[in-house]
Image 1 (cartoon, rainbow, N blue to C red):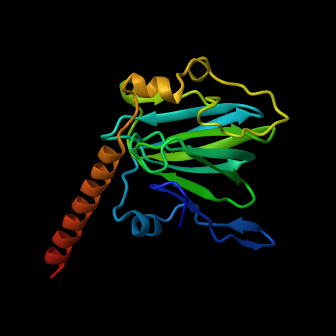
Image 2: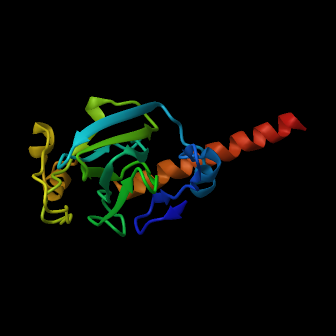
Length: 211
């Protein structure tokens, strides 16, 4: 797990074992993720999306607490995966980072609760699987315009962007801020600290029982 330049986001590069039969890898390792986070995130839902070239999904985020952490991998094709810091008060508020996820490197991205997430399909078809810490709850889910010039994501040229009606009508970051839609960085860090304290308490309880 390698941290990105945005607090609360990591990239995982797996070891791929190949032979005459094909290849094998461990695309999710709970222990390594927990070592980076300081707690073991819940997996409440697993999503799979199939997108044609040019499709952009996002920028999506959820209210914190509880938010929705995501572990994202592209199992077929290629995408440009984008993390956007929409947390008011964050040192990197308004910044974004992008990384290519594809079926060759098999890299994965983890983003903590409160961060915005988007991706664009780069191949003719791309299949993306992501583990979520909470189930989908429409009342807590929000979007920000992926073409907001204030954010300035450098989407790849050469493909006509395709968005859902909801994403196309999403507000800018400034509009979302004025409408009190955005999570606060302080709330996000407090929530993560609470998860770490809970994980520490459970570890102590397990140790006592085993003794």
